[in-house]
Length: 172
Image 1: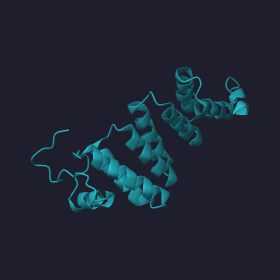
Image 2: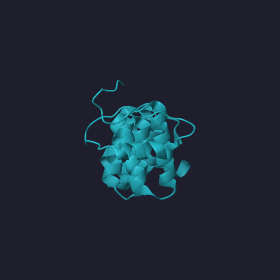
Image 3: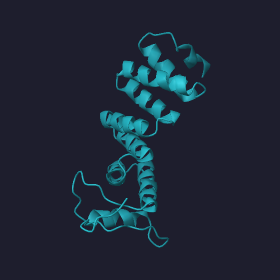
């Protein structure tokens, strides 16, 4: 991604002497404009993702989500960043936001069965079971040997009293 000369955000580079917190604080020093994309190096994005994951594990959910949003501002189609934001939003109890991040992650990387499984599980959790079944059936056709997809599909089918895949829940 090419950086514009008018971009108020400097290109941040990863270095051994500067940890992920450096990137967060460097970003927060600048006035960010909502909806504007910023250029960050791949190593900077990875460092921010590592820091956000650490904050998630430490229970610092607001800071973790802020970092995830920073990553998404630079790389909105990054499936891993959307997945990270999904997990953070889910931990915060913001399930509608988590579903949207899960949907974007799945759309960005439809070849990853765990993203379909995550989306289907979240849709089931929020009561959108028919949508979950549609997502999970498509994933089960594409990835017939994935146990998580089969299990989540079976759970969703049981919730709508559809026995087609319900036997998979007992098998797993």
